Length: 110
Image 1 (spheres, rainbow, N blue to C red):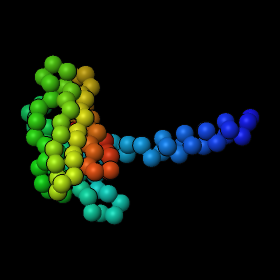
Image 2: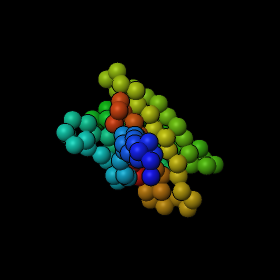
Image 3: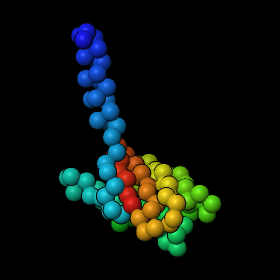
């Protein structure tokens, strides 16, 4: 293999690691340093609430047809987004929301 290919492959692995989403952490996630707590809940099978350090920053509804939704909020001047999708069948934990607070990204199962 060429040196350029090896460098490109190593770079691709490094970049993909930086953009990785933490695996589903139940409905709550605490950062390694303990300074950030992200929690989500699904109320009445459609209303998504996202909390950051106890502050409700998102309160919106997923589509009743698809169970999906994209929401934005703000916490202490930092943008917060949640991209949610619901698996067919509507089981408990079937709604997964990828939540981004500043640079911290986690997937919650609601």
